[in-house]
Image (cartoon, rainbow, N blue to C red; front, side):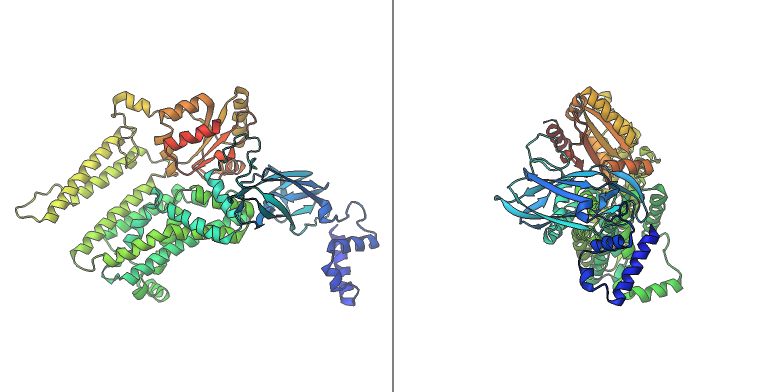
Length: 630
């Protein structure tokens, strides 16, 4: 077969050189030319005939209730790539694409792309369109797809179809991922809202939407460690720090962090699959070494030793980074990258929505832009804090030493936060480390030193803060010894609160653990037979929000009552992020925990629009459950 194709190409080249093949012919239908030439040579007239694109992949559609029902008839011995679909709104102000669920295809070992998912015979795709205006909008939807022929080995170039429809105000009556749902609430999950924003194709909407989304992420608990990291970098400059220098270092830190997010989005777009980069950086082999690095940095702040590179290497780095004027910019950039990968925000609906659609679209630019803009929104408060902090920090004297000591304590706190994510370290050990940090800090603040006559007000203030730190440390120690695991709420879940009754109230749900896709399918079949819904909770030891659900949502009596009555509750622990975990995540189209999925009791299909990503309190989660049951 390859000899025949080579012969055709050689003859085409000869015809072009001799003038028998003109540019006008090349600009016409190339496939028709190949078919005609093959026919004249007596080769490929039957089984190797090259079909026209619209014959190989016959496209048709219907439009009803703001939903495009697209259909393809795929010729025998041909297939379409699942990850080559692209949907873009070309015209229609206020119209966006809803969440599109692609059916499961066949796995094929492709010569060029490796193991991929493809469709044979036929394909049906439901594309919901949402209209945010109060009037009907004439809209042009561009659908791009691509496929290949099995026997000839010929792959068609991307095929573009633009259809024109009139979209009524409101959301699609039937969503692509929940076609059988009868609810008319128009509810769309948090993840799908951001997928729709990204899928709208409007650059200005993407920039504004994801910048504001990143700004919202900046005020979540997972972002707090970045503030002391940046502050300690600035404090480490000592007397040399200026407002301009603090701004420069803050800008380098923020932009390196944003660039890391952008590259993360680009990488996900390239592989067009479920790949959680941050999960790979939550391995003990990564967390423990960096914990030790933060401990070393903290002790250097306390003056126990000085971290210094060899003089020859310092000289080279000085020339590269202009160290004397601009600060240790290379080191600052490295800390920004590590912060994004290791200490950065937990996977929320904004990040998951951006990465999920980037994976589906396979658009490198879209994936990079959305995540880069998000990173800049997330870093704006850091830029302000870093710059103003540099302006008001003391420039000389004993005050600078005090500030450095505080930064050292905060770096130790970050080290403990990282150790919390290591699965084999007992919770009690982590709580004891927190207690030790508070108690020792209190001692250094002078809690145990007597106040001499004539002592200043500052001396009394430090002693008072020291006493408070010791008392809080003792409470944390007590909580850790009696079952608690949250340093911010050190007695939550402790057996000493209310005796046995307190522990009973915080009893966790009886989750049934699952590991693989087969496990999930088995439970879904059992639930359908029993007439119950299924709730699948994704959990990981390194997922901060997952522990919030464990301690504050799944322990709520009202939540438990509703789940136990109507649901079979299952949990997938993806801490290891091994091959089986990744297959399950890909099968359910989940990028990372926290993620909570609900499956219908009648057809065992996911009620996608009610999917939960990010954090919720018990009251919000209860409202979501009630929507699922409607």
